[in-house]
Length: 338
Image (cartoon, rainbow, N blue to C red):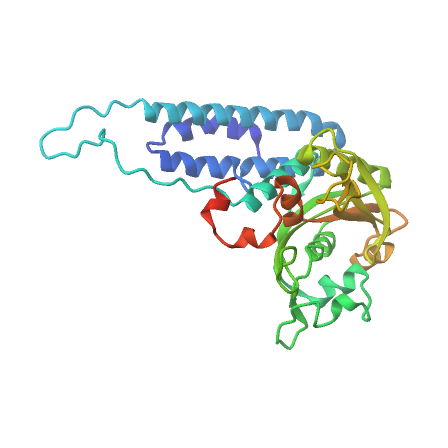
Protein backbone atom coordinates (compact mmCIF):
# COMPACT_ATOMS: atom_id res chain seq x y z
CA UNK A 1 0.00 0.00 0.00
CA UNK A 2 1.15 3.54 -0.82
CA UNK A 3 1.19 5.67 2.36
CA UNK A 4 1.55 8.88 0.34
CA UNK A 5 -1.56 8.02 -1.72
CA UNK A 6 -3.54 7.34 1.47
CA UNK A 7 -2.42 10.69 2.90
CA UNK A 8 -3.70 12.47 -0.20
CA UNK A 9 -7.12 10.79 -0.26
CA UNK A 10 -8.04 10.46 3.44
CA UNK A 11 -9.09 14.13 3.84
CA UNK A 12 -11.42 13.93 0.84
CA UNK A 13 -12.92 10.68 2.10
CA UNK A 14 -13.64 12.08 5.55
CA UNK A 15 -14.96 15.42 4.24
CA UNK A 16 -17.53 13.58 2.13
CA UNK A 17 -19.00 11.68 5.09
CA UNK A 18 -22.39 12.92 6.30
CA UNK A 19 -23.23 10.63 9.23
CA UNK A 20 -21.65 9.15 12.34
CA UNK A 21 -22.37 5.61 11.10
CA UNK A 22 -20.41 6.17 7.90
CA UNK A 23 -17.63 7.79 9.93
CA UNK A 24 -17.43 4.70 12.15
CA UNK A 25 -17.28 2.45 9.07
CA UNK A 26 -14.34 4.47 7.78
CA UNK A 27 -12.64 4.31 11.18
CA UNK A 28 -12.89 0.51 11.24
CA UNK A 29 -11.68 0.29 7.63
CA UNK A 30 -8.54 2.26 8.45
CA UNK A 31 -7.90 1.68 12.18
CA UNK A 32 -9.64 -1.64 12.90
CA UNK A 33 -7.73 -4.79 13.84
CA UNK A 34 -7.82 -5.93 10.20
CA UNK A 35 -7.79 -2.43 8.69
CA UNK A 36 -5.40 -0.53 6.48
CA UNK A 37 -3.11 0.57 9.35
CA UNK A 38 -2.90 -3.01 10.66
CA UNK A 39 -1.88 -4.22 7.19
CA UNK A 40 0.78 -1.51 6.94
CA UNK A 41 2.15 -2.41 10.38
CA UNK A 42 2.12 -6.10 9.50
CA UNK A 43 4.20 -5.46 6.39
CA UNK A 44 7.09 -3.89 8.33
CA UNK A 45 8.91 -7.21 9.10
CA UNK A 46 8.99 -7.94 5.34
CA UNK A 47 10.91 -4.72 4.55
CA UNK A 48 14.71 -4.44 4.46
CA UNK A 49 16.00 -3.56 7.93
CA UNK A 50 17.28 -0.15 6.83
CA UNK A 51 13.78 0.87 5.62
CA UNK A 52 11.75 -0.31 8.62
CA UNK A 53 12.33 2.70 10.88
CA UNK A 54 11.35 5.34 8.33
CA UNK A 55 8.35 3.32 7.17
CA UNK A 56 7.19 2.83 10.78
CA UNK A 57 7.38 6.59 11.41
CA UNK A 58 5.26 7.25 8.32
CA UNK A 59 2.67 4.73 9.55
CA UNK A 60 2.50 6.43 12.98
CA UNK A 61 2.13 9.89 11.42
CA UNK A 62 -0.67 8.59 9.19
CA UNK A 63 -2.42 7.02 12.19
CA UNK A 64 -2.25 10.28 14.16
CA UNK A 65 -3.55 12.25 11.17
CA UNK A 66 -6.52 9.89 10.66
CA UNK A 67 -7.39 10.04 14.38
CA UNK A 68 -7.28 13.86 14.30
CA UNK A 69 -9.47 14.08 11.19
CA UNK A 70 -11.99 11.58 12.61
CA UNK A 71 -12.25 13.46 15.91
CA UNK A 72 -12.74 16.81 14.15
CA UNK A 73 -15.42 15.35 11.90
CA UNK A 74 -17.23 13.79 14.87
CA UNK A 75 -17.19 17.15 16.68
CA UNK A 76 -18.71 18.81 13.62
CA UNK A 77 -21.67 16.41 13.77
CA UNK A 78 -22.19 17.21 17.46
CA UNK A 79 -22.16 20.98 16.83
CA UNK A 80 -24.93 21.01 14.21
CA UNK A 81 -27.78 23.24 15.37
CA UNK A 82 -30.94 21.20 15.15
CA UNK A 83 -33.19 24.22 15.60
CA UNK A 84 -36.70 24.44 17.01
CA UNK A 85 -39.24 21.91 15.70
CA UNK A 86 -42.00 23.07 13.41
CA UNK A 87 -45.61 21.93 13.66
CA UNK A 88 -45.93 18.17 13.26
CA UNK A 89 -42.26 17.48 13.86
CA UNK A 90 -40.83 15.47 16.75
CA UNK A 91 -38.75 17.55 19.11
CA UNK A 92 -35.54 15.53 19.08
CA UNK A 93 -34.02 17.81 21.73
CA UNK A 94 -36.37 16.32 24.35
CA UNK A 95 -34.73 13.79 26.68
CA UNK A 96 -35.30 10.19 25.58
CA UNK A 97 -35.21 6.79 27.22
CA UNK A 98 -31.63 5.93 28.15
CA UNK A 99 -30.18 2.90 26.38
CA UNK A 100 -27.44 0.69 27.78
CA UNK A 101 -24.30 1.01 25.72
CA UNK A 102 -22.73 -2.19 24.45
CA UNK A 103 -19.07 -2.92 24.97
CA UNK A 104 -16.46 -5.48 24.00
CA UNK A 105 -16.33 -8.72 25.96
CA UNK A 106 -13.45 -8.71 28.51
CA UNK A 107 -11.72 -11.56 26.63
CA UNK A 108 -11.95 -9.62 23.35
CA UNK A 109 -10.53 -6.56 25.10
CA UNK A 110 -7.60 -8.59 26.44
CA UNK A 111 -6.93 -10.32 23.09
CA UNK A 112 -6.84 -6.91 21.39
CA UNK A 113 -4.50 -5.59 24.09
CA UNK A 114 -2.10 -8.54 23.82
CA UNK A 115 -2.07 -8.48 20.01
CA UNK A 116 -1.41 -4.74 20.12
CA UNK A 117 1.63 -5.30 22.36
CA UNK A 118 3.13 -7.76 19.89
CA UNK A 119 2.27 -5.80 16.75
CA UNK A 120 4.10 -2.90 18.39
CA UNK A 121 7.20 -5.13 18.40
CA UNK A 122 6.84 -5.94 14.70
CA UNK A 123 4.66 -9.09 14.85
CA UNK A 124 1.81 -9.71 12.41
CA UNK A 125 -1.59 -11.07 13.50
CA UNK A 126 -2.65 -14.23 11.62
CA UNK A 127 -5.74 -16.38 12.17
CA UNK A 128 -6.47 -19.96 11.12
CA UNK A 129 -9.38 -22.46 10.86
CA UNK A 130 -10.83 -24.08 13.96
CA UNK A 131 -11.32 -27.39 12.09
CA UNK A 132 -7.85 -28.78 11.48
CA UNK A 133 -6.07 -31.80 10.01
CA UNK A 134 -4.30 -34.28 12.25
CA UNK A 135 -1.09 -33.47 10.37
CA UNK A 136 -1.15 -29.77 11.25
CA UNK A 137 -2.44 -30.28 14.80
CA UNK A 138 -0.05 -33.09 15.76
CA UNK A 139 2.34 -34.58 13.18
CA UNK A 140 3.85 -31.32 11.94
CA UNK A 141 4.44 -30.25 15.54
CA UNK A 142 6.56 -33.34 16.31
CA UNK A 143 3.83 -34.89 18.47
CA UNK A 144 4.24 -38.71 18.14
CA UNK A 145 1.39 -41.15 17.46
CA UNK A 146 1.56 -42.55 20.99
CA UNK A 147 1.27 -39.12 22.64
CA UNK A 148 -1.77 -38.98 24.99
CA UNK A 149 -3.03 -35.69 23.48
CA UNK A 150 -3.90 -37.64 20.28
CA UNK A 151 -6.30 -39.87 22.21
CA UNK A 152 -10.04 -39.40 21.63
CA UNK A 153 -10.40 -38.60 25.34
CA UNK A 154 -8.24 -35.49 24.84
CA UNK A 155 -9.27 -34.29 21.36
CA UNK A 156 -12.59 -33.69 19.55
CA UNK A 157 -12.33 -35.77 16.36
CA UNK A 158 -14.92 -35.29 13.60
CA UNK A 159 -16.74 -38.19 11.94
CA UNK A 160 -15.24 -37.70 8.48
CA UNK A 161 -13.22 -39.87 6.09
CA UNK A 162 -10.28 -37.51 6.53
CA UNK A 163 -8.71 -37.25 9.96
CA UNK A 164 -10.21 -33.88 10.93
CA UNK A 165 -10.62 -32.46 14.41
CA UNK A 166 -11.41 -29.33 16.38
CA UNK A 167 -7.97 -27.84 16.97
CA UNK A 168 -6.69 -28.41 20.49
CA UNK A 169 -4.30 -25.43 20.35
CA UNK A 170 -3.48 -22.52 18.03
CA UNK A 171 -0.10 -24.03 17.10
CA UNK A 172 -1.36 -25.55 13.78
CA UNK A 173 -1.32 -22.00 12.38
CA UNK A 174 2.44 -22.05 12.98
CA UNK A 175 2.68 -24.98 10.53
CA UNK A 176 0.35 -23.30 8.01
CA UNK A 177 2.27 -20.02 8.13
CA UNK A 178 5.70 -21.60 7.78
CA UNK A 179 4.56 -23.77 4.86
CA UNK A 180 3.29 -20.73 2.97
CA UNK A 181 5.96 -18.15 3.88
CA UNK A 182 9.71 -17.88 4.06
CA UNK A 183 11.68 -16.40 6.98
CA UNK A 184 11.95 -13.92 8.56
CA UNK A 185 8.62 -14.46 10.34
CA UNK A 186 7.17 -12.84 13.46
CA UNK A 187 3.53 -13.86 13.99
CA UNK A 188 0.91 -13.98 16.77
CA UNK A 189 -2.20 -16.16 16.43
CA UNK A 190 -5.30 -15.52 18.58
CA UNK A 191 -8.24 -17.93 18.45
CA UNK A 192 -10.59 -20.46 20.04
CA UNK A 193 -9.40 -24.00 20.85
CA UNK A 194 -11.26 -27.11 22.01
CA UNK A 195 -10.51 -29.93 24.43
CA UNK A 196 -12.98 -32.41 26.01
CA UNK A 197 -12.36 -31.24 29.58
CA UNK A 198 -15.03 -31.39 32.27
CA UNK A 199 -16.27 -27.87 32.96
CA UNK A 200 -15.40 -26.49 36.39
CA UNK A 201 -14.06 -23.25 37.89
CA UNK A 202 -10.72 -23.57 36.07
CA UNK A 203 -11.50 -25.71 32.97
CA UNK A 204 -13.70 -25.41 29.88
CA UNK A 205 -14.15 -27.47 26.70
CA UNK A 206 -13.68 -24.25 24.67
CA UNK A 207 -11.25 -21.50 25.52
CA UNK A 208 -8.93 -18.98 23.86
CA UNK A 209 -5.20 -19.09 23.21
CA UNK A 210 -2.60 -16.81 21.68
CA UNK A 211 0.31 -18.49 19.91
CA UNK A 212 3.41 -16.53 18.97
CA UNK A 213 6.54 -17.45 17.05
CA UNK A 214 9.55 -15.85 15.39
CA UNK A 215 11.89 -17.45 12.82
CA UNK A 216 15.07 -16.07 11.25
CA UNK A 217 18.80 -16.62 11.22
CA UNK A 218 20.50 -16.42 14.64
CA UNK A 219 17.30 -16.21 16.76
CA UNK A 220 18.32 -17.02 20.35
CA UNK A 221 16.62 -17.96 23.61
CA UNK A 222 17.60 -14.53 24.92
CA UNK A 223 15.41 -12.99 22.18
CA UNK A 224 12.48 -15.03 23.49
CA UNK A 225 13.13 -13.87 27.06
CA UNK A 226 13.31 -10.22 26.01
CA UNK A 227 10.06 -10.37 24.00
CA UNK A 228 8.17 -12.10 26.81
CA UNK A 229 9.48 -9.66 29.43
CA UNK A 230 8.09 -6.73 27.42
CA UNK A 231 4.75 -8.56 27.10
CA UNK A 232 4.47 -9.52 30.79
CA UNK A 233 5.33 -6.05 32.09
CA UNK A 234 2.93 -4.42 29.62
CA UNK A 235 0.04 -6.60 30.84
CA UNK A 236 0.78 -7.00 34.55
CA UNK A 237 2.88 -3.94 35.41
CA UNK A 238 6.52 -2.90 35.43
CA UNK A 239 7.15 -4.11 38.98
CA UNK A 240 6.59 -7.84 38.32
CA UNK A 241 9.45 -10.33 38.23
CA UNK A 242 9.79 -13.27 35.81
CA UNK A 243 11.36 -16.70 35.89
CA UNK A 244 11.77 -19.49 33.33
CA UNK A 245 11.45 -23.11 34.50
CA UNK A 246 12.69 -26.07 32.38
CA UNK A 247 9.80 -28.05 30.90
CA UNK A 248 9.01 -30.41 28.00
CA UNK A 249 6.95 -29.74 24.87
CA UNK A 250 7.32 -31.97 21.77
CA UNK A 251 7.51 -28.97 19.43
CA UNK A 252 10.20 -26.96 21.28
CA UNK A 253 13.69 -27.79 22.55
CA UNK A 254 14.75 -26.46 24.98
CA UNK A 255 11.34 -25.72 26.51
CA UNK A 256 10.35 -23.58 29.47
CA UNK A 257 7.31 -22.53 31.43
CA UNK A 258 7.18 -18.86 32.39
CA UNK A 259 6.11 -17.59 35.80
CA UNK A 260 5.58 -14.08 37.10
CA UNK A 261 5.69 -12.92 40.69
CA UNK A 262 2.20 -13.00 42.21
CA UNK A 263 0.38 -9.77 41.38
CA UNK A 264 -1.68 -10.08 44.58
CA UNK A 265 0.98 -10.62 47.24
CA UNK A 266 3.99 -9.30 45.24
CA UNK A 267 5.81 -12.62 45.63
CA UNK A 268 5.36 -12.99 49.40
CA UNK A 269 2.92 -15.93 49.16
CA UNK A 270 -0.89 -15.99 49.34
CA UNK A 271 -3.89 -18.23 48.57
CA UNK A 272 -3.95 -17.12 44.91
CA UNK A 273 -0.41 -18.33 44.21
CA UNK A 274 -0.62 -21.34 46.56
CA UNK A 275 1.81 -19.66 48.98
CA UNK A 276 4.57 -19.98 46.35
CA UNK A 277 4.80 -16.33 45.33
CA UNK A 278 4.74 -17.25 41.62
CA UNK A 279 2.02 -17.62 38.97
CA UNK A 280 2.42 -19.62 35.74
CA UNK A 281 1.35 -17.64 32.65
CA UNK A 282 2.58 -19.46 29.52
CA UNK A 283 4.76 -22.11 27.88
CA UNK A 284 7.63 -21.38 25.50
CA UNK A 285 10.81 -22.66 23.89
CA UNK A 286 13.02 -22.84 20.82
CA UNK A 287 11.25 -24.42 17.83
CA UNK A 288 12.27 -28.08 17.45
CA UNK A 289 14.43 -28.91 14.37
CA UNK A 290 11.91 -31.63 13.40
CA UNK A 291 9.22 -28.95 13.04
CA UNK A 292 11.48 -27.00 10.69
CA UNK A 293 12.18 -30.13 8.63
CA UNK A 294 8.45 -30.80 8.30
CA UNK A 295 7.78 -27.35 6.79
CA UNK A 296 10.86 -27.33 4.56
CA UNK A 297 13.11 -25.01 6.60
CA UNK A 298 16.76 -25.93 7.04
CA UNK A 299 17.39 -26.12 10.83
CA UNK A 300 21.09 -25.56 10.17
CA UNK A 301 20.27 -22.12 8.75
CA UNK A 302 17.20 -21.01 10.69
CA UNK A 303 16.29 -20.94 14.36
CA UNK A 304 13.18 -19.65 16.07
CA UNK A 305 11.15 -19.51 19.24
CA UNK A 306 7.49 -20.10 20.02
CA UNK A 307 5.21 -19.41 22.97
CA UNK A 308 1.57 -20.02 23.83
CA UNK A 309 -0.77 -18.70 26.48
CA UNK A 310 -4.36 -19.22 27.61
CA UNK A 311 -6.24 -15.92 27.39
CA UNK A 312 -8.71 -16.90 30.12
CA UNK A 313 -5.78 -17.74 32.40
CA UNK A 314 -4.21 -14.32 31.80
CA UNK A 315 -7.57 -12.57 32.31
CA UNK A 316 -8.27 -14.40 35.57
CA UNK A 317 -4.87 -13.40 36.94
CA UNK A 318 -5.03 -9.82 35.66
CA UNK A 319 -8.55 -9.10 36.94
CA UNK A 320 -8.69 -11.40 39.98
CA UNK A 321 -11.44 -13.68 38.57
CA UNK A 322 -11.83 -17.06 40.29
CA UNK A 323 -14.23 -18.88 37.93
CA UNK A 324 -13.65 -19.36 34.18
CA UNK A 325 -17.38 -20.01 33.62
CA UNK A 326 -18.17 -16.33 34.22
CA UNK A 327 -16.75 -15.49 30.78
CA UNK A 328 -19.49 -17.52 29.02
CA UNK A 329 -22.55 -16.77 31.18
CA UNK A 330 -23.55 -13.37 29.66
CA UNK A 331 -24.19 -11.99 33.15
CA UNK A 332 -24.35 -8.19 32.75
CA UNK A 333 -23.39 -7.66 36.40
CA UNK A 334 -20.05 -9.30 35.55
CA UNK A 335 -19.55 -7.91 32.05
CA UNK A 336 -20.30 -4.28 33.02
CA UNK A 337 -17.22 -4.29 35.25
CA UNK A 338 -15.06 -4.21 32.12
